[in-house]
Image (cartoon, rainbow over all chains, first blue to last red; front, side, top):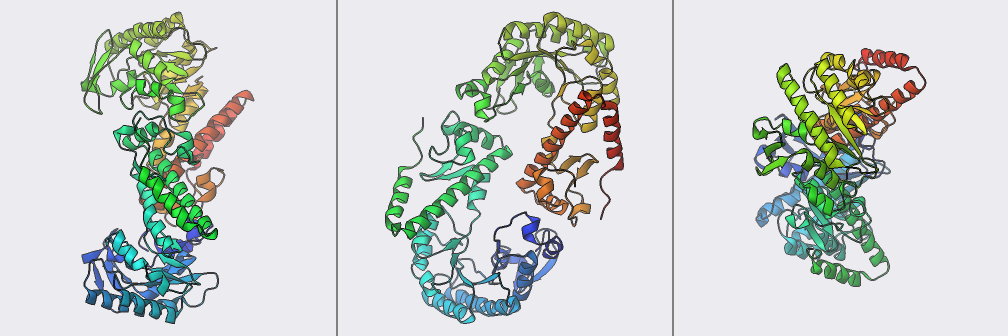
Amino acid sequence: MLRPGAERIARLGGLHRFMNWDRPILTDSGGFQVMSLADLRKLTETGVTFRSHVDGSRHELTPERSMEIQRLLGSDIVMAFDECPALPADRARIEESMRLSMRWAERSRAAFGDRPGHALFGIQQGGLERDLRDESAAALTGIGFEGYAIGGLAVGEGQEAMFSVLDYAPGQLPADRPRYLMGVGKPDDIVGAVKRGVDMMDCVLPSRSGRTGQAWTRRGQVNLRNARHADDPRPLDEDCTCPACTGYSRAYLHHVVRAREMIAGMLLTWHNLHYYQALMGEMRAAIAAGRFAAWEQGFHAARDQGDVERL
Amino acid sequence: MLRPGAERIARLGGLHRFMNWDRPILTDSGGFQVMSLADLRKLTETGVTFRSHVDGSRHELTPERSMEIQRLLGSDIVMAFDECPALPADRARIEESMRLSMRWAERSRAAFGDRPGHALFGIQQGGLERDLRDESAAALTGIGFEGYAIGGLAVGEGQEAMFSVLDYAPGQLPADRPRYLMGVGKPDDIVGAVKRGVDMMDCVLPSRSGRTGQAWTRRGQVNLRNARHADDPRPLDEDCTCPACTGYSRAYLHHVVRAREMIAGMLLTWHNLHYYQALMGEMRAAIAAGRFAAWEQGFHAARDQGDVERL
């Protein structure tokens, strides 16, 4: 929206062509992103006004404008425009915000219209309050969406509180549509979410971790900045077939992380994406085979080992 | 030498394995690199002592230690240890420095010994003084090396002064051995050097330019940060087959450079290396076909056009 701008992307043929990506693209509506601006934003029934972090210019984001932006970008999965309060927040604030988001969900649906081949997802809100989540789910189902997201989680409430909501939230949403947990997460968050009925997630973690020297393996998280790796000729993960693990030692990865070489972020992002893809593939196979519980036990057992012993 | 350390690289199986590169590796001796430390170094007949920019520790570099480091790294083409004075410098300083470098070249040759499959290159010095370059070439040829480098250029003297030395320096060195111009350069520097008899060069430019938003094409240099590219759907170079040119618009490259996305440096480095490789390949073919002069005319004519017109 702000840089390089939705109208510009549209003139350039849309986001798929712009970023040379011919698979599905999901875009968020901007509601969550505006939340992060805190004092720089002003909220009304109509929408949100805020100042750009790029050049300080003033902008308005409404359900209608959010739908227009996502149409201009050419996204395949479009998210309804919502308000997402930071947690902790008191019940009255959560309730008021959720009801505003449901009115915005209706306006999003109307503005999106009928676009074959494209999906609009509603976003459930209601914080950690079960009855508010129920009310939100009923409102969304009444409007009707191609998929349903669970919003307002992974905003600082902790895994235990998040799982306590996920114990019931997916069941409040239609079982014949994708149920999407927004902004999650670490591998164990993902496994716990899938176990509770979640079908989709999104997170910056594989790439952000990769750029900061963090790797994920089946034995947990590995910090490549740590001096223990400086003389270690072993790959990050003996069993991994990604280019970082088949071509390089921990000593090399440690060196390029410390020396701030771009290849550090490239290789570790590649590894992390490979690990995440393998993790999702394993879960799909385990669910299809009816052996998810056994698979989950193995997942936790491998992590409990921790990283390989120092040489 | 300083990070991650030559002994460590040796324990890890050498540089080829460390960086997963099975083609030849050329390493510089450290003489030029120590020059950049200026006041932090102390020069004697034995060698150079200096403080590490990494941790402030004191180190000594001598011809013998330089040969040992390059052997530990496992480099295929090893450079003799030399002293490289910054230009401008007075004749007495250049002369004294060149003679020291020739004594160091002899010690380098003795320390390197006989290593089949590995090459030691001597480095000619002598600044912009033809008779000193002659004396240096005679000294090196007397010692005997697998290849000969022209050092002490591309250190701020400008293209005209550099070419005036290259008008005679390659001819002072054995024609049956590679003649290598160190630290060059921009495409027109390279073409001018090849025309004057140079066989090899090295430079950080393709990757450093790529990381800072600069691209090289047959029509010259393109600064992707420039706002003129923001709405330009055309590739960087219509005729280039590299991934940056076949997959992305100038508008995309402009956006990712401005947004400081890693893919900017990745794509532009890829393009620049592709351009440099194509340039070298064209020159080899033109020389083999005896039509270098015509090729060079075409090279300059394309550059004189400048970048494509703004849309």
